[in-house]
Length: 146
Image 1 (cartoon, rainbow, N blue to C red):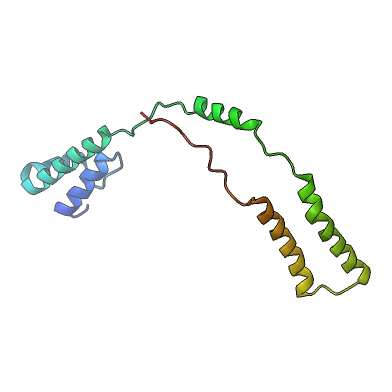
Image 2 (image 1 turned 30 degrees about the horizontal axis):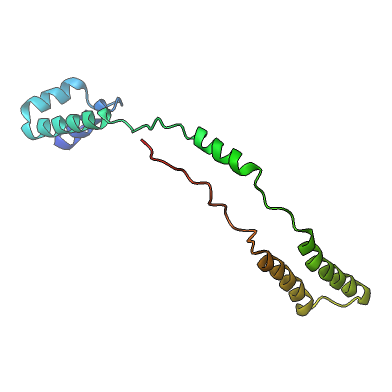
């Protein structure tokens, strides 16, 4: 049989309250609680705290965002910028010619041969004022959530 003290009674009472098996019987716990005022007060506080936590519920918003998002998606669906063939040819032909020249001459890849390619690509994106890694942040929610 286990040693019955205030700590073991409190642990056993909390186990019973949680629906777990207790090392002590319910009769032993009740007998101790009827004689020990500090244990019975603490168990009462634990029950009150448990009731308080059990009564709480998460807030649930009933706002349907899809109509607003769908309208925005439909409005921006046909507004893609025109493809700029001239810009592609302006920067693509020199880049293509440079790579062909490097292949014909069978030059070993050096730092400069790699840098020219990177510089031409940076020039294309800076001329177009486009960042291919930019996250589109124009899709914003208007109005308030209630």
